[in-house]
Amino acid sequence: MNTARTTTRRASGWAVEPPEDGAGPGVALGGRPRTIRFPPFWHAWFARQTEPRLAALDELVDAHVERRALRRYLRRLKHAMVFAFVAAAAAAHWFSDQVAWLAAHVPALRALWKLLTGA
Image 1: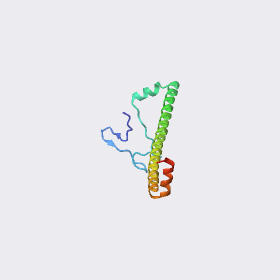
Image 2: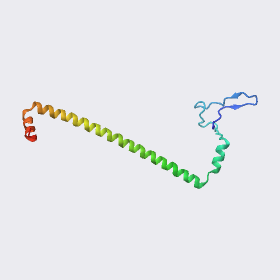
Image 3: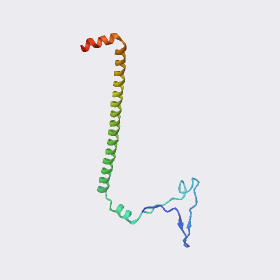
Image 4: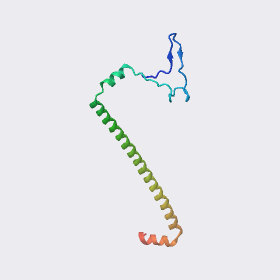
């Protein structure tokens, strides 16, 4: 495929490592420029590209990015709604337990409940 050559070959066939830069091997910060050689397949692909084809490709990429952003937003919204539902259910359960305990231990609340429900 497409590989960047980091070693050069001598006529004898032995690989020679390029000199290291100050930042370390494989990093060309201010060192000699590295070239990437693409295979002929990619040269032909780049040569076939015209302005309308590149515009259509840009539109496809933009649509993909928009769909991905929308999916991310909807996933976050779904997670927030599930969290809110579970939190509301837990709060309602906790408060109903508290009200039941209060009604069982406070005679005035028990009498008020009987008055409201008619039981």
